[in-house]
Length: 74
Image (cartoon, rainbow, N blue to C red):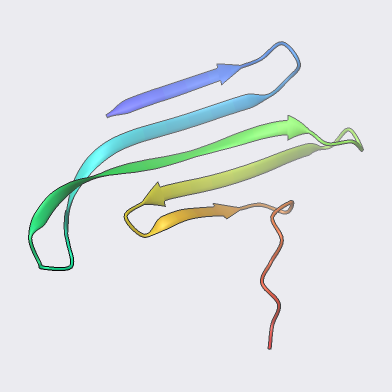
């Protein structure tokens, strides 16, 4: 497992963890997959913090936060 945490001089913050996990491919054969979870934060134009929480794995990249557009409802 790898964990990185840092903050820049202008207030950008990042916290990220990465690890390997076993997953099955389309042929049901096991293989290693990198899983990354984390968050970042910065000040928006209005001076308020913008926080994004994310995860990336064999299923793709997923992010959540008030600044992330939501899919339209049908």
